[in-house]
Length: 307
Image (tube, rainbow, N blue to C red; front, side):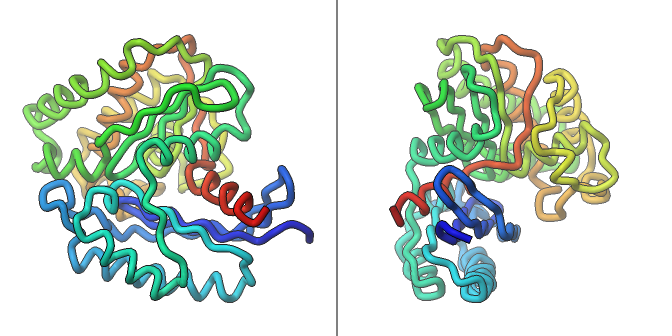
């Protein structure tokens, strides 16, 4: 095979993911994808600090990934950290520890850099029309719109972990908690999205959205092939959001497509998705769900660094 073998790591608020891919010109061939739910952003919204036990879980995953990377003869490793590390006052300590394990220093993406990487990763398989990408994470949510390249991007400090820790404290969330969370989301989201031109295509990415899609499709298990590029009616996806919000955590955890590390926070993510879809001006009643996201954008960026 020609080209370069790249390793991309996306270190988010809830999960840390690894993609090793062969990149040759405009062609990317995935060799392996891994995900560990480590909840690095545990209590960061409240404390402003990465908790020692959260860092330990994340560094354990990094050691595991280092072994996989070494075994696969990777040419370059790119490690991107997002919302939780962006917000933490001990980010340097975390970056030093990661560098000691992986030999590469994390790049802490700004919200705009995160949005652009998500857009690049998500739009490769999408028609060339005015497209909005929604990347819903544990600590932040990015909305990016553009035709081929981004013309608008915004990173909201709204994520599934952040909203759950701040508002959704009972199981299942009470009507009052849901109402308070929705009011906050509407106040933050509506003014930012109101002036956008109507988007012709909407692409939803990252684990919260792909899991809500699996719920909408009532899949017997998490099936990436069924989920990738699935085209769903927005009304159906919003109904799935409402269903997950009303479920106790034990019932969510029992769903065959639910990652156990996502079950306790997905109601917060479902609320965010519902409100973004409410306020995003659109000329479509459908959403495309993509398994390609910021991780793929990081991989493309790593290949460019190699020239």
